[in-house]
Length: 163
Image 1 (cartoon, rainbow, N blue to C red):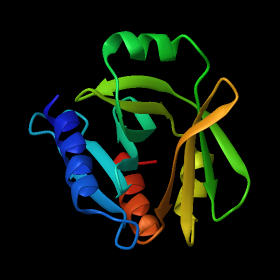
Image 2: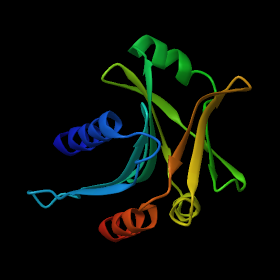
Image 3: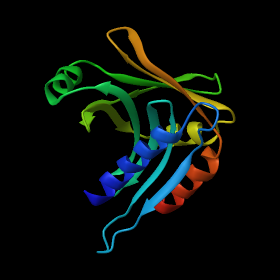
C-alpha cells in the first residue's frame, strides 16, 4: 500500500506543478525492504491530468488520472459499461485500451493492462501522446502529454520491471 500511495503522491505533485509547456516524464522506483516485488512508475502530467505506466508483481498497467470528482457508487456505474482509453502517439494510429474506473482521493482514475506493444508505442513517441476516455460513443477527458523524457523513463521502468 505504501508503494501505491507514493506513486499516487508523485502524480499529485506533478499535476500541481505542471503545465503544457513544462510537462515531462519522470521515473520512480520504490524497492521493497522485505524482498517483495518493487513498484516502478513512469509518469507525466499536464494541467489536471496524469498519465503513467506502472508495474509491480502483477504486471504492467497504464493509469490515467482525471480531475473529475467521483464516488464509489459512480465508479460502479461507470464500470458497468464498456470504458476505453484511447491513446494516440504523434498523430499515429489510435490504440484502444479497455480500462476499469477507480476513485483515488475522490477523483476518477482509470487503469488497464499495458501490453508490450502499448509500452513500445509510448516509448517511441517523439512529440506527444494524446489520450481520451471513451464510453457510450463519446470521448471525454481528452489531454495531450509532451513526450519529453518518455523514452528514458520507460527504459528505466522496463529495466526495473524486467520487461
